[in-house]
Image (tube, helix red, strand yellow):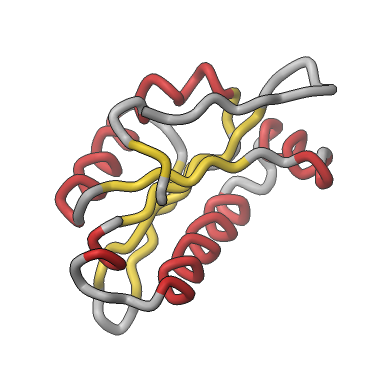
Length: 128
Protein backbone atom coordinates (compact mmCIF):
# COMPACT_ATOMS: atom_id res chain seq x y z
CA UNK A 1 0.00 0.00 0.00
CA UNK A 2 1.32 3.44 -0.89
CA UNK A 3 2.44 5.51 2.06
CA UNK A 4 0.63 8.75 2.76
CA UNK A 5 2.18 11.84 1.25
CA UNK A 6 2.30 14.84 3.53
CA UNK A 7 1.55 17.95 1.50
CA UNK A 8 1.88 21.23 3.30
CA UNK A 9 1.65 24.82 2.20
CA UNK A 10 -0.27 24.07 -0.99
CA UNK A 11 -4.02 23.97 -1.53
CA UNK A 12 -3.62 20.81 -3.66
CA UNK A 13 -1.26 17.90 -3.20
CA UNK A 14 0.44 17.14 -6.51
CA UNK A 15 2.50 13.95 -6.55
CA UNK A 16 4.63 12.24 -9.14
CA UNK A 17 4.46 8.48 -8.73
CA UNK A 18 7.30 6.27 -9.99
CA UNK A 19 6.90 2.48 -10.09
CA UNK A 20 10.08 0.40 -10.33
CA UNK A 21 10.48 -3.33 -10.93
CA UNK A 22 11.71 -4.84 -7.64
CA UNK A 23 12.96 -8.00 -9.36
CA UNK A 24 15.67 -6.01 -11.11
CA UNK A 25 17.48 -5.63 -7.79
CA UNK A 26 16.32 -8.69 -5.85
CA UNK A 27 16.39 -11.41 -8.52
CA UNK A 28 18.28 -10.11 -11.55
CA UNK A 29 20.96 -8.45 -9.36
CA UNK A 30 21.05 -5.10 -11.13
CA UNK A 31 23.18 -2.57 -9.24
CA UNK A 32 20.97 -0.26 -7.17
CA UNK A 33 22.47 2.78 -8.91
CA UNK A 34 21.40 1.43 -12.30
CA UNK A 35 17.84 0.97 -11.06
CA UNK A 36 17.75 4.47 -9.58
CA UNK A 37 18.96 5.77 -12.94
CA UNK A 38 16.01 4.05 -14.65
CA UNK A 39 13.60 5.78 -12.27
CA UNK A 40 15.25 9.14 -12.96
CA UNK A 41 14.94 8.58 -16.73
CA UNK A 42 11.23 7.74 -16.41
CA UNK A 43 10.45 10.68 -14.12
CA UNK A 44 12.28 13.14 -16.37
CA UNK A 45 10.60 11.74 -19.50
CA UNK A 46 7.12 11.96 -17.92
CA UNK A 47 7.73 15.60 -16.99
CA UNK A 48 9.09 16.38 -20.45
CA UNK A 49 6.21 14.71 -22.29
CA UNK A 50 3.67 16.60 -20.16
CA UNK A 51 5.58 19.84 -19.72
CA UNK A 52 2.71 22.10 -20.81
CA UNK A 53 0.14 20.35 -18.62
CA UNK A 54 -1.19 22.72 -15.92
CA UNK A 55 -0.55 20.21 -13.10
CA UNK A 56 3.02 19.70 -14.30
CA UNK A 57 3.62 23.44 -14.42
CA UNK A 58 2.20 23.87 -10.91
CA UNK A 59 4.34 20.96 -9.67
CA UNK A 60 7.49 22.46 -11.18
CA UNK A 61 6.58 25.83 -9.68
CA UNK A 62 6.91 24.27 -6.21
CA UNK A 63 10.52 23.27 -6.92
CA UNK A 64 11.65 23.06 -3.30
CA UNK A 65 8.62 21.08 -2.14
CA UNK A 66 7.95 18.57 -4.92
CA UNK A 67 6.49 15.23 -3.82
CA UNK A 68 7.48 11.93 -5.39
CA UNK A 69 6.48 8.45 -4.28
CA UNK A 70 8.51 5.48 -5.48
CA UNK A 71 6.61 2.21 -5.47
CA UNK A 72 7.65 -1.30 -6.47
CA UNK A 73 6.14 -3.68 -8.97
CA UNK A 74 7.17 -7.29 -8.38
CA UNK A 75 8.13 -7.99 -12.01
CA UNK A 76 7.82 -7.02 -15.67
CA UNK A 77 4.34 -8.53 -15.99
CA UNK A 78 2.97 -6.40 -13.13
CA UNK A 79 4.64 -3.27 -14.51
CA UNK A 80 3.29 -3.85 -18.02
CA UNK A 81 -0.18 -4.58 -16.66
CA UNK A 82 -0.11 -1.33 -14.67
CA UNK A 83 0.95 0.58 -17.79
CA UNK A 84 -1.96 -0.91 -19.73
CA UNK A 85 -4.42 -0.03 -16.95
CA UNK A 86 -3.12 3.54 -16.76
CA UNK A 87 -3.43 3.89 -20.53
CA UNK A 88 -7.00 2.57 -20.46
CA UNK A 89 -7.89 5.07 -17.72
CA UNK A 90 -6.29 7.97 -19.60
CA UNK A 91 -3.55 8.47 -16.99
CA UNK A 92 -0.50 10.11 -18.57
CA UNK A 93 2.68 8.18 -17.85
CA UNK A 94 5.93 7.03 -19.42
CA UNK A 95 6.89 3.37 -19.43
CA UNK A 96 10.69 3.41 -19.49
CA UNK A 97 12.14 0.66 -21.68
CA UNK A 98 15.90 0.31 -21.37
CA UNK A 99 17.73 0.05 -24.69
CA UNK A 100 19.28 -1.77 -26.41
CA UNK A 101 17.96 -4.61 -24.23
CA UNK A 102 14.32 -3.54 -24.83
CA UNK A 103 13.59 -4.20 -21.14
CA UNK A 104 10.72 -2.36 -19.40
CA UNK A 105 12.21 -1.24 -16.08
CA UNK A 106 9.87 1.32 -14.53
CA UNK A 107 7.22 3.88 -15.23
CA UNK A 108 6.48 7.37 -14.03
CA UNK A 109 3.22 9.29 -14.03
CA UNK A 110 3.04 12.97 -14.76
CA UNK A 111 2.29 14.93 -11.59
CA UNK A 112 -1.33 14.44 -10.53
CA UNK A 113 -3.45 15.43 -7.57
CA UNK A 114 -2.82 12.57 -5.15
CA UNK A 115 -6.47 11.58 -4.82
CA UNK A 116 -6.82 11.23 -8.62
CA UNK A 117 -4.30 8.42 -9.10
CA UNK A 118 -3.59 6.89 -5.69
CA UNK A 119 -6.53 4.43 -5.98
CA UNK A 120 -4.94 2.97 -9.13
CA UNK A 121 -1.67 2.37 -7.27
CA UNK A 122 -2.93 0.99 -3.94
CA UNK A 123 -1.70 -2.54 -4.53
CA UNK A 124 1.93 -1.41 -4.91
CA UNK A 125 4.16 -1.05 -1.85
CA UNK A 126 6.84 1.54 -1.27
CA UNK A 127 10.09 0.54 -2.93
CA UNK A 128 12.54 -0.65 -0.30
